[in-house]
Amino acid sequence: MGGVLRGILIEWLLNKANPYDGYSQPHPDLDSYEALTPDSIHYDDAMRKINDQQKEFNRIALIIQGLLDRSTAMHPHPHVNLATQEGFQLMIVLMRDGSMVLTHGEKPDFEAYRRKLNALITTDCVFVGQDIAWALAEGQKESRRMDADWRNPHRGEWRPKYHRPYGNPGPGVVSQPTQVTFKKGVAPKATFVWERQRAYNHYSDDRSLVPVKLTVPVGDLLNVSAYQQGDFKTFFADPRTRVEYLQWAPLLLAAEKWCQQHLMR
Image (cartoon, rainbow, N blue to C red):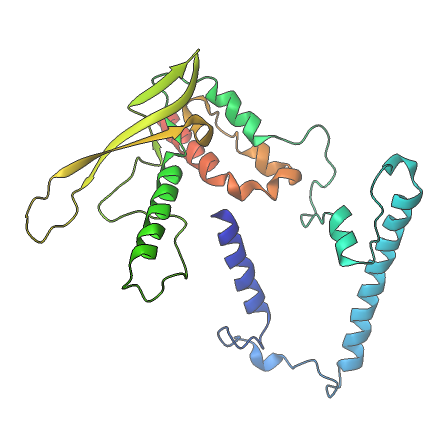
């Protein structure tokens, strides 16, 4: 989900920066721009600047290529040619955050952190992650329903990854399970129970609630009760995990919010 949001943001920024993008709304400063074509009086100056930037980039790539080829400290590594797109992607990772590029120690490991917290699970713990697991399962169920509906004119097209049916609140973003199963002192799964509205029926006025049960592997959950306020900064502050942070943000920020509210009571 984070990747989708990041992609939408990047696309919006690109559209906003390009006044000649025909698929976006008219740029508010369109009158102050002109297309870069050979007919423009600024064409030579603009191309000279672009060429200078390209030469500077190539100079840096040449230095890195020399280090890879001649520095024994970087051996062994596969043969690579940074002048090609494939070779560059194989060996180079661009750090687009200018701060804290130099780091020390091991890269923070989110899964190790999750296992550490989940090792402290008791029957009274609250969790986060069950709502995502439920919405993902409902998305798969809804996709199967859409595929089986012969009346659907969009069969084989877009399908939801996450789905939250009307009248079904789900297990809650942060909630306590009804049951935690332990095996040899380790909790492999947790069961959540809640109520949803009964599906509408033309032949009945029954509006009673129906119980729903969901069992989730602990590996998909995060023990919020063991979370310490500010833990999310470990993964956000380190540039090596900041680029991956969005995939963990829903769990960490929900735990952070619960922790802050719990301490205020």
